Length: 140
Image: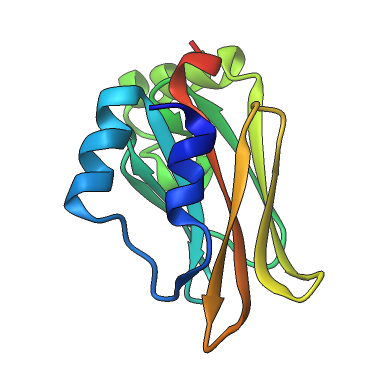
């Protein structure tokens, strides 16, 4: 399935948003990653990558082929192996996703330097989130 076709399946869905089992399977088979907002402080990565991150207002996430990097504050600074692994990933991560709070009538909207398609999530018929879908192969 093409990225644009998959994205069209998601467009206009109601909040709270979740991928169906069938959509999960399609995303994993095709390397698709779906990014969307939940609540007033969460960014969700679903599909080929499954992660959840905390964001307040505007937040930028570094992304590599393993997913979003944890915040520096979220790693064990006493674990030298973990610190070195984090630094290695961070030095190679050139892709970003910016979560933007409360703009253009959306609670959440995303910008990225990863080629992507967009879709809308609504809540009670009103704009809630403009999510993005990208192919993990665009990062590798």
